[in-house]
Amino acid sequence: MAALLNKEKGQEIAVVVEMDGFHYYKSELDQMPNPQEAHERRGSHWTFDAKKFLSSLEEIKKNPRETIPCPSFEHHIGDPVQGAIQVTPRHQIVFVPGNYVLIEDEGVDGGVWAEVSRVLDEKWFVSIDIDFAMEALAKRHARAWNWSEERARERIDGNDRKNALFIQQHASNAHLTIPYVFDATLQSTDNH
Image (cartoon, rainbow, N blue to C red; front, side, top):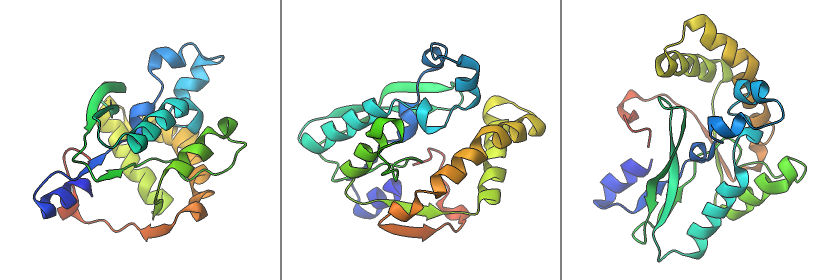
């Protein structure tokens, strides 16, 4: 969306700050009370550094005349890459894609996701058939991690589908719901 908007305007007025950049590092998951579960459930809301995510979003909002570095996530590395995204004064629109930005329940992770949700000016939910999404995700898992289809599906059944159902529980908190329509002409190599 940001790339299309920038192309339309002929200048870079929009940027994407990915929630994925705020995954805990694998080394941080290793330090959790149950490291095996933390790795198996990576992508669940509690495997993100939501406080750091909130802090970055607040800094962007409070300091529009400063350049704010933010992390991205590289699936082939499996960890965040610090400073890969630069939010600069020329950016008038900041897109924040994230599975958990619609959580308004103060009881989830000490309320930090509810604080994240309050920082955002607009919240959109892209409604997608879960089975379709899980099939696409299985292909991404297999490609990114050189997994067999069977291993990718085990990961989906043990983690990703649970996360998707949890996300859907909070969809009503969106200001706008957009039905997902696949359009190959909109596919981008940089996922932005």
